[in-house]
Picture 1 (cartoon, helix red, strand yellow):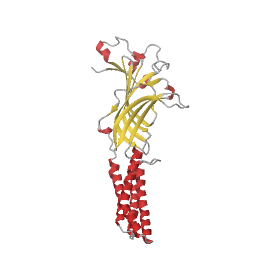
Picture 2 (picture 1 turned 120 degrees about the vertical axis):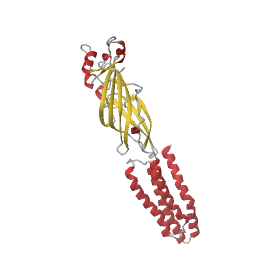
Picture 3 (picture 1 turned 30 degrees about the horizontal axis):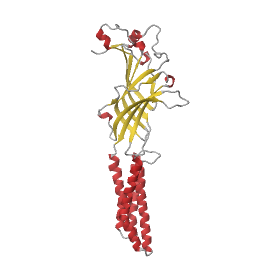
Picture 4 (picture 1 turned 45 degrees about the horizontal axis):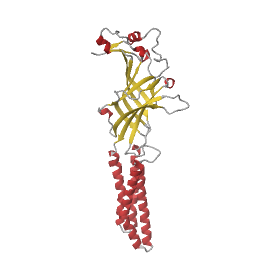
Length: 343
């Protein structure tokens, strides 16, 4: 049997006792009300590292108990109706916790539902679309995991009136539909914590409910479109170590051409990379590739000057050693960068 929905005005009259103002805090602010919250994500729109934000849509649920809305036994016409009785309200009809997203950039409420059962438990469900700010750690880019946070806090004046439950509502989760999937990211987990906000001399002490959405970047695009071509361009100069040290023009053309190619390649992909003020793993690999080609030019100049001064045997020996030193050095640097950035 479907729950019985009573119009808001009738519900308020039925629940309100004489001289009871339902717009005020249920305990008059003397003791905090425990609020259980839930987050169900139905639409994952985008993650923007450049603007340090992400955009999602879904359902936000809050549940609390207001003893003033409890109905006495026998209020309903029969026992079966009494067990399923619910009343529908509007937000302006009664007290509701003033909760806001501390890291919200924009928030749009599409629809909401506010109902109370016969025991006085009030359930608020909101369909929303939001853009939220977020801190990203991109040092391991593009092989990184990120934690997207929804930080729900009480409004300043009501910070002492509510506290968040230690566990989320059962409605918390992520929809399995395709709208929550992104081509560049894989969603791993949705976690919940209720903790105290860091103390600030300008803000009263309060508690916040934090939902953490753990996502992992799909690195295949960067691996095949950036890392592999970059490695090939970096290793092309190996061929110069099989060219005679007297062929200065030919020796110099190869690494210089690769340097110019890498510069053009980097300019082409820069617009698709996050703009951060520190070195990421991809930045370090680019710098290592530039450095190896640059050192190759100095090696060519060194062996050419040696043979011009009559030390051809030394020049040939040094130049031949580059056949294995150059690729091994590049591989060693890449392994060092992997250990540095990913451990």
